[in-house]
Image (cartoon, rainbow, N blue to C red; front, side, top):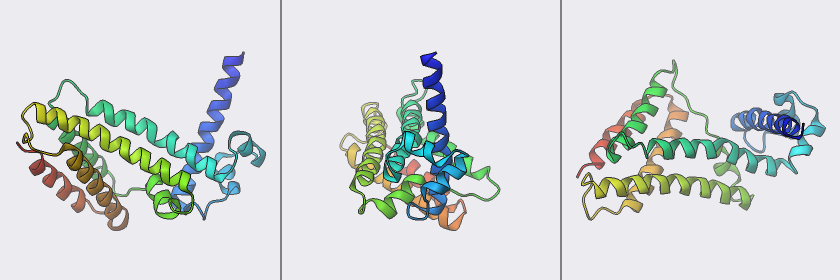
Length: 200
């Protein structure tokens, strides 16, 4: 019975995180109140405070809820033993390009981007969590680049940490342009340049 109750509690918490983070992505941190979050989740307002101490606590938990699984999938893709390290990286970003190309109007809504631009300075805990997630992504990419280097797919003198940071930052810029311009040209240019970067 305890296991069933824990499952119910987790399911409701996940529902609030999922629906509430979607609202906060569209409206921003300041534009989203607890009322909007609970209305999106279809729950009483009191239920919110059963799971979250505050709106800031909700935002912190939402960051982990959304991005920890994404980091896991990223790590899995960049550690696929069936592909060479270079092929893993290029395949991952080509798949993302294909994902956006299938959309009738390419668009991207970024929860971490919305929070980092709006709240990183005002709420240091959010800034720290955003930085930790971004660094984890860079570390995953760096590890794969180092494997590519060891396999002779990158020059022996390449600084893999610097290259991983550059690629990750460039990708964030591409996503920002996609959000504004809603066309694939920046993504296509990114993939083309990435192919040239990852050459021995």
